Image (cartoon, rainbow, N blue to C red; front, side):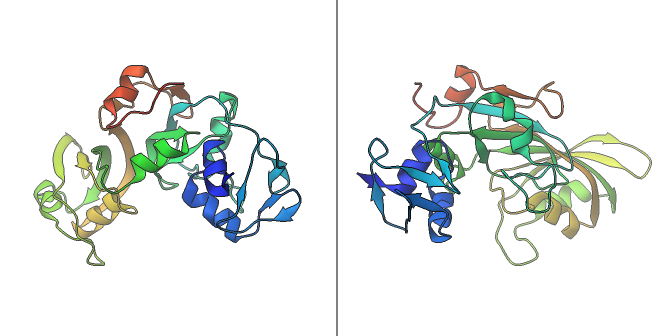
Amino acid sequence: MERLQKILSAAGVCSRRKAEELLKAGRVTVNGVPAGLGDKADLEQDVIQLDGVLVAAESPKLYLMLNKPRGVVTTLSDERGRPSVDQLVASCGARVYPVGRLDMDSEGLLLLTNDGAFAQQLAHPSHQTEKEYHVTVTGQLAGSPARLAGLTALEDGSPIAHARVAVLARGRGTWVLSVTIHQGLNRQVRRMCRLAGLQVSRLVRVREGALELGDLPQGRWRCLTPEELASLNGSPRRQ
């Protein structure tokens, strides 16, 4: 017998944290009876369902990189009917979920997996992987790299570590900046730019740790290579 949140995570349904939310919402049943937080079950003997859909045994582990387009939400479903990342990776053959987030207006590298333990490990605050963004900005351009790099807090007082900032291209009234951070607070780069007097017209995540987006087309996904998995701190065990 195992706790239901562990079963759901191991089956690739969602992370343990999300499983707790599903249990609290009454969306999980065991043998037809709504289950609660802390309940246990046996996947081989009990009928476990999420929203009426049978939870199957663990499927092979998948680790995907998606080039998320602008206008797509980082969720497995959207009550407003907007395009979501699950539609882009439907052909992978398993139910995978995002590791971290990119807001709807942002693009680029997004990891997805059905390995709940791996997702939790990467999302843990102690796992501060560098994330590099290419940001197209307008506004107070002169001196903006130094202003961005010098920020130590967001507008709500949340402390942030110093970013690395470089100018990639200069146009008439528009610059493209490389901004590298490792905390990944909610909409952090956009909030930093606003504090520095900049308006963001495009934001693309191009790197996470040693993983690079490269020439992966928008809206397409691929599996991570063994070498890429090994480059992530504490890489998962292969099946």
